[in-house]
Image 1 (cartoon, each protein chain N blue to C red):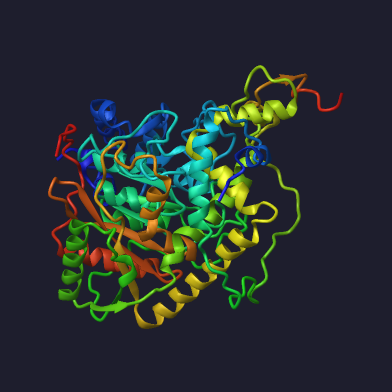
Image 2: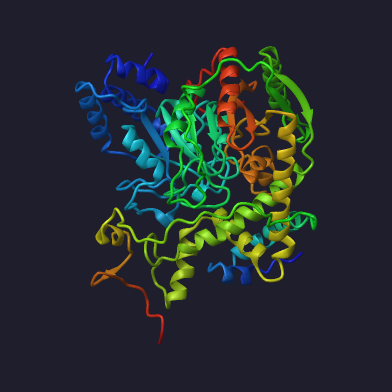
Length: 89
Length: 491
């Protein structure tokens, strides 16, 4: 089975070098061949009836960290904002 | 005996009787780290502020205050558990300089108990691996023989406890990453029922599988740590609302009539003769202690590894999409646009195994392939759960090897991902089903490497597992976990 490495890398937002591609193609093709041997189990209900998920109240609460602490890990700050390349030409 | 060789329970009692101070315990552990860390490589970051916590405990003792059993005990944290102000890297270039602005729920609980954080331990990058060889910061060595791997992905935590560089440790277990390194390093490692320990602050790999686990040198120590970190947390939507347990004070010493199921599917040809012999000897001892051994069958075990890797990688591809170089973490240089920055950041920031799993996860969820892979994996998961439910009507716990072999040499596993992944057969079924499981030492290989025995229980049967493990420990002469630190040898 062929594995379209370039397409999957594009979906995964990964940039692969030309050198990386052949080995990855072989490896992922072999892996997906094995993983694809799972049988169809049509009689298994994958959404069984049961308890509903308990959701907490949608209520804003103070967070323990200050804005400065939260921004301290940003790669680049300008005027208190996280700087990134422009998104629209 | 040095203080770093003692158990948490012993040290807790010594502190209560004022036979030593928390500062003395920390100094002893730190001396041990200074002496051997160069050979073991268990830590990525040491906590320079650990003395403050130790001194606070000593002040409280001097004032006659009632203390938590873990007060003053040095505990290592796997480096995917958030610790406010202490670098948390997931052993990845992507988070090399990341300092969390908040504590994980388990960090809050242990700080509140007065535990002392020794540092952040090495791991496979983003918890993806089985040997702690994929870390961006270098490898960790098995303290029993430094030519061998400690296991993974919580290899640093296991090595730290095994070598005396920590008294206790926290790890994380998605497909066996607490149990397997515990087995390979000869210590106790336990993954609880999914939802028993809050995942708030655990940096995610696969959210429906991840669980923080506990590591120690005795069953009692593992039970103490589990008691301290378990409990409902409203910040984790998967956190179970269940009564909190005092596992270590409720430990039993007899297991008469305990029914232990032994699934034939866990003893295939990939299990080495040494592991098979050690596990069989352990089961024989349990029988002598009053347990009843029954052969059972779990036919869907053959689907477990495939289902695990499809589900785990699918979830990882989603969880790791957040690493884009925008808000935190590594950002590539020399990009031409936002999308170029994202792609370069991810390609340069992640290691090969992480990229492999992200791509696999992306593929199994992609249009045209989702039904063939992901949908079938979810169905297989339900079948595995159902089979465990049926099995626990016939037996109380299930016994199996923790890993097919003792530790292997660095590089021995090779580049064959298919072969590597298939070795997870012992641990992934319990992960898939969200069941609690514990690994305990049950023997040594001919070249002195530890072998692990695993007990798996029904949901919320942590106490029963700990009781069974405790009985084995007490009747087998103890685990004698501290490694003598053999230099790498050719054997």
